[in-house]
Image (tube, rainbow, N blue to C red; front, side):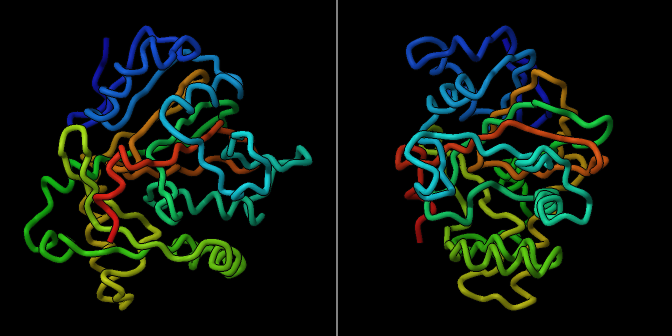
Length: 285
């Protein structure tokens, strides 16, 4: 059973224990819902790291941004303001400033050589207020995009640079990300191979159109994102402990919202890497 989250995308999936989902039992139905609705919510879950990784692996390869430096075993990549030494990063800490970059509209891993298919995100520690995660459907936005904007982005190749989205936050962050993640180029529209439906594929990391990094080109990107993220297109998720969200990185934009930074906020996270069967070929230049 499902319940809509927004008129154009997203459903809550009821009466499912994700610990019991296997390739043979339950996953095919979830994958069908994922391809159709782009965002899935599961409430009342109790995933530890092992169960989280096991469930994520059903969707595809677990992303490793360390490029093997952390070993071969899949690992969590949690979103948290708690440092390794147990202290909470302050508002002016680089960790917190980097997390604030997630408050820009984006899709995960668009800046990697193999982008993400999905994110599996679960609430572990929540702040007293704030910290919502908001989503929009870039499939619905592409369908509705005015002709004047569509003509500027249809068939083009976008350049994506993680540092681009950090340039106004911190020069140190900009330089760190610029050195670590080379630019990536992907076509502007991702076609879902299961149902043939198209979605815009861009993010706050998008810095150029067909190699043009001019202010005019960047304004086009900003105008398209602004259209995609009009208030009536947004689903805002207020987290509860036990919530798990799974979303289609090919067909959505998302962003986090601020919270009291003196409080811990930890979301257990893994990204799943897209494969050829997910339509990766449709965005290759």
